[in-house]
Length: 85
Image 1: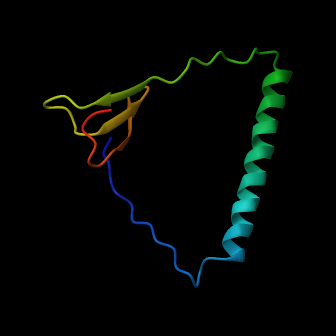
Image 2 (image 1 turned 30 degrees about the vertical axis):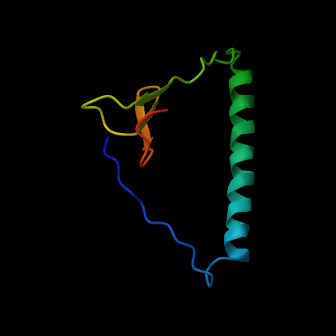
């Protein structure tokens, strides 16, 4: 897995009602799909899987990636300028 910085900027001319509308539609679709998944799972008679709490890891040892933050063994990001928590 490689880590790549993605540029992010907001153009005041393109930000606005259209973006908010799309966000609202995606939010509603997400809720509808989650409800559908719960119904399908319940209709199959399968119990909900037990979730264990996420394991957070931070490495700041010599030779380790500086400021690397892992969740359940997967690199999720880097904390720039942070060498210890």
